[in-house]
Length: 218
Image (cartoon, rainbow, N blue to C red; front, side, top):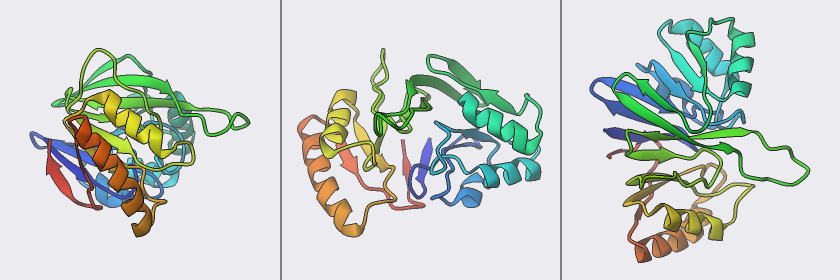
């Protein structure tokens, strides 16, 4: 399976001639990521993970496009696009989906706390083929399995470096690649990734930085 990283939290997975995109948000190259893709997974409703305007346009331009997301996203897209339910599907945690050649398992359920006065939203993490885990905006660790490749929210208003490190340690992944990184400068990457990579190695995880549009086999 081929994984391509786009800006921020957007990734594309390709397998057996089919591609699947997770979190094509407002910080990402949405149209490029979606090119040739009929399957989209969205972890939660925040615009850096879900660009409503561009996804509505994508639905209009591609009659085969199908989207799976928490209810808040699906309700908004249904109203904006007028699409029938067979193209827009609500997902919750602890479910299994068969999407073409991909087997998808869902975990979590809630966005990480930003501040007690800011309401949380639904957030669903996706495990693809028991091989790749995209947690969205959470440090949820999938229960009942160890996923070899984990996408790590590297920097966010709701996290601190110690939580990022502890998340990697808890997953026991073989490989880790960064997501949720659009707010970091080159200097910031150097500071954060130096510590993240050091502790990941101590616990048997290889951490590697991926630039936008860089691909890796998983």
